Image (cartoon, rainbow, N blue to C red; front, side):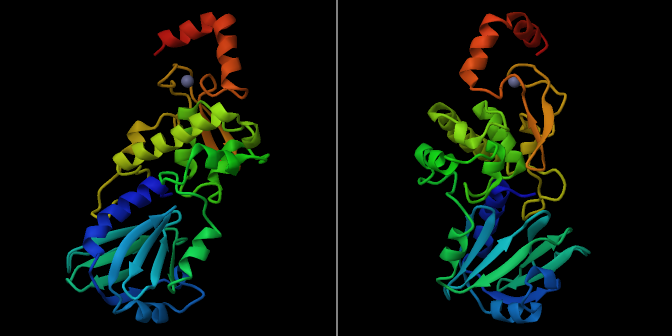
Length: 300
Ligand SMILES: [Zn+2]
């Protein structure tokens, strides 16, 4: 499922192809994409719009038009966008929509599972729509340690569940939450409200580092995600914990474990990410677990 780094990669690739271009022809083949509206109605509304900006908010792509209207695209599980020069689109049974631009090129939307959505909103409707659904942008200036701490305060939920909630902060999903918690040395089941100032500081850094690594790698391609030119991301080659159960932690050599948290497969290092405060675990391992630490180090 595309998360912030994947959506940001798509945004950055589409921006130079779309800004200043006009939607000449729009074909929407899947009613699920725009329901409860009629595909033909939405397509007709989009024709003639000229793109002013291609932005991202959380996992949403935000196409701003010169008219002030906005097309909000959510890729959900398996949605992807492809930009192709005129006549270059190959047959694809999972294509759900095609936009032809005024330079003759096409932007095609494909979606195997069909959970993705296109929503056309009027100027002024966008901010309230997003504000009701999304917390801060984790790479934005407003996302401070203090902001994160207040978002987590009083929440009984495991920290992993709190971070998956898009109202805590926008754009994190199953992959980058696990990767961020490993960087922060936090167990995914730690109750959010029990994190102290040091925990939250490490978490803040861990979130940014995990997301920045994902963006630098053009996202992670596990199955369906592809960049608009058909390329693959390579973040999966750099995963510290995600999908690595039984493999050694790159920091300490302990085998990565898999559990379920909030209904999602969750990977973590039982040694680097203790269930209690990390300082206690480090003190305990210094005094009593020296043999096991050295044996795990030798297995690196
Ligand atoms: Zn470890």
